[in-house]
Length: 111
Image (cartoon, rainbow, N blue to C red; front, side, top):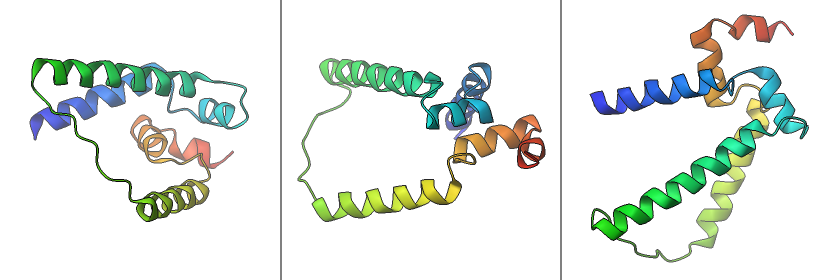
């Protein structure tokens, strides 16, 4: 449990340091003016692919393909899309947490 909290704090510190939890960064991503978030996501996917392959090659993990459940994928996409629409991309979960922790939540809401 403590390890999970440590990783959560490190992740939050990374988001704060990289300014990924600010309104202008997220809004810039939505208008394709600021691609910092997209670059960070692409980096995380690449790093995750390298690390999972390292784990598999060292024997710490095994790779197995699960069957495609198309209905579940479609339902999950609908739920995810509805959630993003409701949060209107400004108050996504990590942005809301970052705004709350840094004290900028009410400043952003007044815009």
